[in-house]
Image 1 (cartoon, helix red, strand yellow):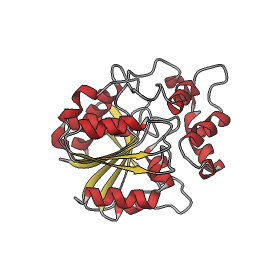
Image 2: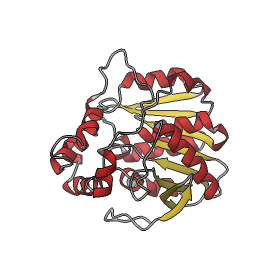
Image 3: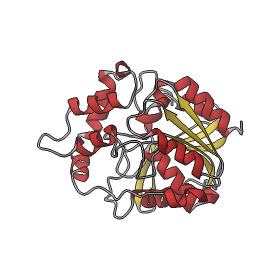
Image 4: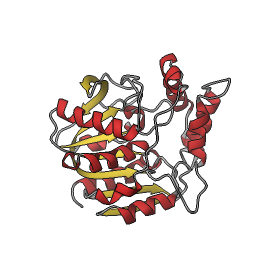
Amino acid sequence: MDRSDGTEPAGTFVQAGGVRLHYHEVGHGDPLICLHGAGPGASAWSNFKSNVGAFASRHRVFLVDLPQYGRSEKVAITGGRLTFTARVLDAFMEAVGLTSAHVLGNSMGGQVALKMAIETPHRVKRIAVLGASPISFSALTPLPVEGVRLIQTYYRGGEGPTRAKMRALMETLVATPGIVTDEMVEERYAASADPEVVALFTKTPPQNEDLFADLGKVAAPTLVLWGQDDRFGALEIGLLLLKRLQNARMVLFPRCGHWAHVERAEEFNHLVLDFFAGG
């Protein structure tokens, strides 16, 4: 499955919870489900292509395009996004024959992972979340943060999606803007500008959900990962996760943004694999 040029290989489709989901499966071993973030043009492959080779050396990896993203169905979500997506992923695990799995979630994907651990704890072994903000308040940082504002305005306004908007958004994801190449921008822009996607995201977005009151229910061992210079998630929210979750530890990446899995891929892969192995 590994592609040296970064192009996405063919995947598989499955019907789960009334949604046609697209996913990639690679590797052997303890199951690991990878959930991407909610930025325009996001998909499981675009988020985790720097990590999938390392993960697949030890795990049976599922890169899942969440509802509305990647090649999955552009279904309208009514009610809370996390509740809807956690329900669909429960059905996905049933459809592909998984009793339980480790879950890695980037940003919104991390919020979904935590919601899964709250609603279907029997499904979740260990969780690693990167820059996930399932809490809607912060004492130290004005909300919404810079990156979230860029997402909120990406589809709104007369011009709609543009390459300039996409570059600005992607450069906010990292501490070193030079990491963002023209090819990366074009890949995400093309996905975000698909007419079906534009029509979906110019409508009323799904409801956000605050998990603060339920975080104490998360018993699964959890690794909280955060970039010191994250402009999509306030660092103090990561510290609140550390305090509220039953069994959590935290790693902070210095001079790193929201995309530690890209900026610090080798170190990130090592930490995550060691954690899922029980280390």
